[in-house]
Image 1 (tube, rainbow, N blue to C red):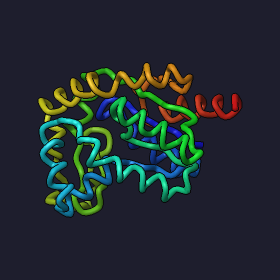
Image 2: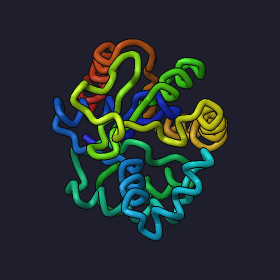
Image 3: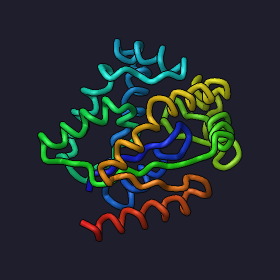
Image 4: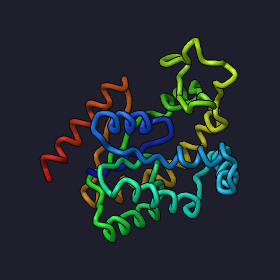
Length: 214
């Protein structure tokens, strides 16, 4: 099965993608992780991407398209979940063409819906371990006591003002993809508020229905 999961920043798509990887055997492709790794390593693409990330803007196609293509190829074109890609209609059109050319069409698109205020709270209290990449939330999933606090930081793009800017960019650039995929009868809208397991159950119930419909 080939799935896309998208939603506004902070909707929890990365968390749900990892659960689907662990429990359903899907291979997670997170372009966000790929880009952050490039930024951490200070590659030429990473330094270029950093400027867009810190401004809360989308990273241009030329930076991420090749990375997405290579990552899909590495999965063997199946049993994958795309997390954070596509983000624009242009990217979606390319992905559709890529799927047709390689006999790997998308089976379902999961869109997580979460209220803006919930997202701002989630992201402004999110922290990241610079050594391991683990993500924490100050209220719901604080860093373990044995983690060096010097390695626990807030990402620049998780500042409240930047988060709201990212939400505006999302509504302008990415949310129109709902109509694109609805036209292809692939869109599944999921309530993204609640605890992690409840949201996971909503997603898997929907995906099981997709499987039965094939």
